Length: 159
Image 1 (cartoon, rainbow, N blue to C red):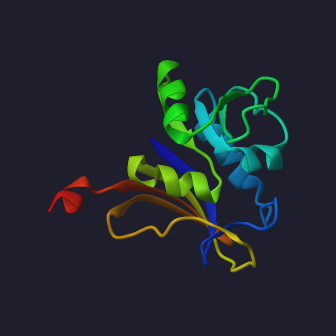
Image 2: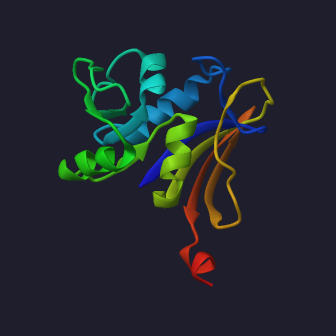
Image 3: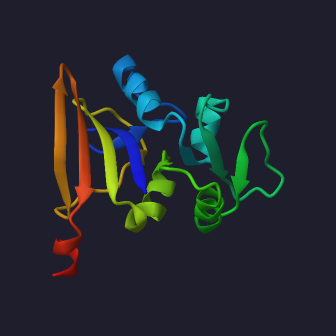
């Protein structure tokens, strides 16, 4: 299970119902990495996008039993979302936000695809703290941001 997010230095990933920065290279990377795979996201994250993302299967987690959107699968909790995702037999499943969904899925994630954004904006939606059990396996530095892939070090967790 892969978590994918753009995260500011102060942990902010959202302000209001939006992302407090625009990095076109981040959107291109998100598209390239997730294309052809399954995305799990919360309803607020989906609402901020406003449409199904082409070439991907999207599962929206919502507590509202009446919520639907064309081209979207729904689940009423994260366990149901994972069940729906794995029933599709995808090569990869991405957890794509927001803050509550990342936190709830945290223990199930084994890879993080993070865009580290070199700012500290105001915002109430935060990414979980990336602790020492996460090991950087690649970093691509750019002006104002970095693309970072981390893997969970399961041996450090077991010891």
